[in-house]
Length: 260
Image 1: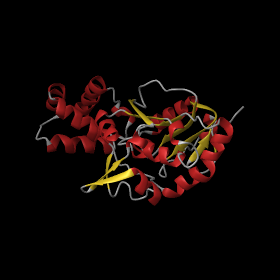
Image 2: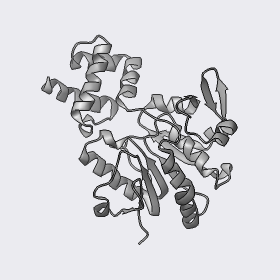
Image 3: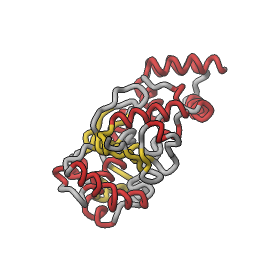
Image 4: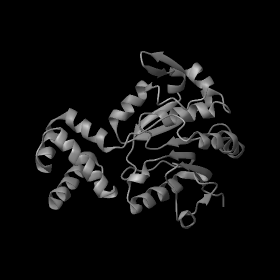
């Protein structure tokens, strides 16, 4: 079975551009085996053949493979730090036309949270966020902008009233917020990284990567930041060797590429 999984990893790389070697193997293999069993397919080879022929199964696989646990204002105390310290600091350094990248943005909760957080400091029509993910399905969901009550639980009350409309049991985010975000496909392990960003937000994604893959991504983020720019990571993550990469740690979740 180990040999079969090695074959499967190579086939997935060819089909999707996703390198399964960068993920913790036991955890990822368990997820994939569960999906194969759910579809009533026997063996990796048979599943690869299904993925090649069946577009819906292929999209289901990519959606299942990418970890999409997301919510607005996740870890609210860190968003308070952003509101009180990080955004004012960035504006003082770079002005109000900030370049911001929400990487591995999942269903849009995070980039839309960023737009709302920035709107307390910058006119809405001046805000632009680039949001990326490797999963077409979650990008499609993000563009629709329909969320559960649980997803928006931590959104400040004034923003809930102003920017969300209740539709049945769900909540639709306003076009006013959606129009400030540009969604693109991007693979953190394979794609070229954009340059000169004032803030990059990538939270609770890299915990699924191997230590080597994490290091590679954090180094690439460093190169993507403008000098003085800030990386915001998740509550379950830390950059242990941040000094070796050139970062200065502002607190547990914010790291700066210092100006020379």
